[in-house]
Every structure is written in structure tokens, then in C-alpha cells.
Amino acid sequence: MGSVADNSSRTRSSYPVDGCASPTRRESTILYLPDAILRLGSHKTSWKITMLEFLTPSKKRKWLDLTPMIDVVFLLLIFFMLTSIYAKPMMPVSLPESETSTVQEEPEITLGISSDGSLSLNSQNITIDQLYERLSGLLDRHREKNIRLIADKQIHFGLVINVMDIAKKAGADNIAVVTEKKAAL
Image (cartoon, rainbow, N blue to C red):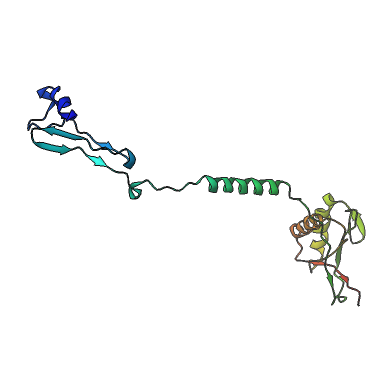
């Protein structure tokens, strides 16, 4: 009955017109289950229960913690960035050997790359800067634009790719890479 004494101290203007014991402003209280206390208001013989909401598991906000997934994505991103930076620009490759190597008709243009990286065009030493001019001049004079490429297997394959690109730009149709015949066992 302590609530009756509390209500008597209020003025008449703070109650609604119908004479209920609740104040004019709406009370909305969310009470968690352990803290839930029924607040009862009384005026004369009427009892009113104020709004009481319990937070049940179905009303809890459901969300997914994305922090571990974001951490993994950033670690993968850093890993791929670092491995792409340290990738070797050229990789050493041993040129292939074939078991069925046969002697074919000699092409007219022979391009050689020695183990120290020096170039030769039809047995004449040239630099990589002279290759395009000399090769385009030779290819213009020949009907078949075939090149025979002899490269040492100790050189970086990136140099072979550069030479092949220059030969294609100079007008070569076919580039045949010479291989060694495997020794019979």
C-alpha cells in the first residue's frame, strides 16, 4: 500500500481525465527477467499493471561476428602481396630433349644464344639491339620466314622469350627451337 501514499502526494492535474492512477506520459519499461518487478498502481478499487516486457531469447538481436573472417582475408591479402613481390622475374629452364629428334631440312636463318647470353645470327655475333634490324633484313629477302633457334640450356628462359618476341616483330612466321636427342639407354 506504499503506492497509495505515493499517489496521494500527486496533484490532480497530473492524472488523466478518467481518474486512473497512471501519469499522463506513457511509461514503457523493458525489464530483464531477473530484475522484473511488477509495479502496481491503484486508485480506488481499480488496479493497473504497467507495461512489462521480458527480453526472451527469440527477441534478442542475432548477428554474426565478422572479425575473424576479416582477419583471415587481410592475412591472405598480405601473403599474396608479399609473394608476388618476391617472385623471380626470370626462371631458369632446361630446354626439352626429344627421343624422336630427326634431322630436318636446314632452315635458312639460324639464331643462336650461348651460355653467356651472347647472340649469333647465321654464325655472326650480334647484340640484342642489332637483332631486330638484321633479322628483319634477312626475313625480307627469304620466301619462307622460318627461324631455327639454338639456345643453351644454362641461360635464363626470359632471354629466349625476349629473342622470340623480337623475331616475331621482325616478321618471322615459325620459330623452331632445337633440342638435343636423349641418349639411348
